[in-house]
Image 1: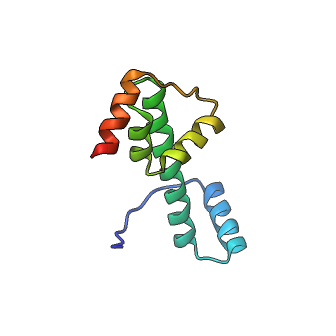
Image 2: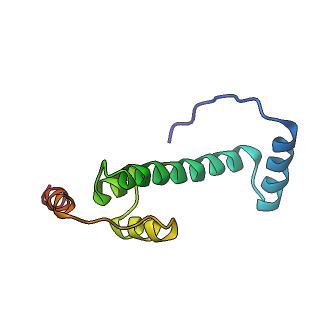
Length: 101
C-alpha cells in the first residue's frame, strides 16, 4: 500500500483523545488515525449503500458489492439497522443477473 501525506486541522480535545487512545492501544498516533479512518470509511460505505437499497435504487446484492461486504453480511446489517428486507420480482431479476455474471 502506497502511503501519501495529507494534513487536517483538528481541535485540541480531539488530538488529546487520539493521543490517549493510541497510547491505550499501544500504537503510534498515525497508525491509530489510519485505523479510525479505515473503520469510518467502511461504516460510511455500508451506510450509503444501504440508503440506496432503502430508496429502492439498487438491489441488496449491489448494496453489498458497493459496501464491500458479503450478501450475508448485508442481510445482517439490514437487521442491525432495522431496515426492512424488500424483495420483489425486480430484485429477483437483478440478483439472477448479478449471479450469472
